[in-house]
Image (cartoon, rainbow, N blue to C red; front, side, top):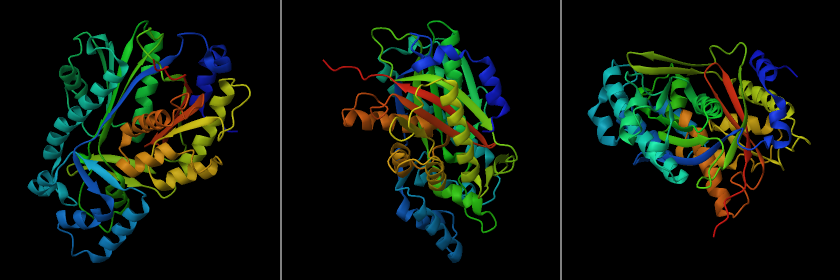
Length: 409
């Protein structure tokens, strides 16, 4: 097995004994104490999106390309997506719906409003789920690939949520689709190294910088127009839960790998016409191979004995980056067709919402598990793996342990 340098460093630095047999040293690992999500009101059905997209972008004359785009949309397995930009906003901003038009100022104005608006809604639900107040938050980690302003979305979130002026803030820009995992990894470090910390993680994305009209010379961009959606996800993270708090998931171990030779495989560039990205056909192969390595590494280094069966004893929270990637991960790891059910459900309902996706999947799994009356939020299982991937190609994984559901009175 080939182990990345980043993972070798993790092995050397990690006190493996802390994780033996499920890391049951009370309070030593960070836990997720609350989860919330938010989506915009504007909803677009996937089966009619190709007609709408070519009409709104004044591209109906591109008959062959429209047929190709309709075929791409049909194969995505997406049923609907949500956008912060309404039909009225799009019709009032033709520079946004053109393929290439100087429009960065208008796009950034929309993102400056949309990112914190969605983020506040998700954060409010996460704190309500947690059961405590904004004044109890000590740290804020915000992540988005949809903006680049200063002061950042973290400042606006703190103001709108009424966080204390002393709240320690971290703003993650342009981490891409793996940004949700990065934010969770950072929250784990903060919670475990600051006694009593309660870390609010907010991942919020809107398509204002990336939505544009079609071009026959840029098919990768066209794929993005078929799968990206807007949403925000939020969690509250902390160690040593009090009697008033209920921990759902323990963040046991985190690992990251940059796949060698993939620097140009998944790229986003900020230009006058917004964010322009390119997608390589081999992304599913690169991601699935890296996931396999990281999963083997973490299960070994956490000394989970015996090593759990990836189908019967492990739940999966995987970023729904696209149908082809989910299919390839499923095949590479020999997973049953239902193991990625939560990821596929999020893909159907919301599309790829970039850094917020993994939190939406986590929330969906918790909802499904509660609905079925299972013993843990992880489909009734103890062990789980949270996986994200994005530009780099960067692949991140977090080993989770689902804790018993709170008994109802």
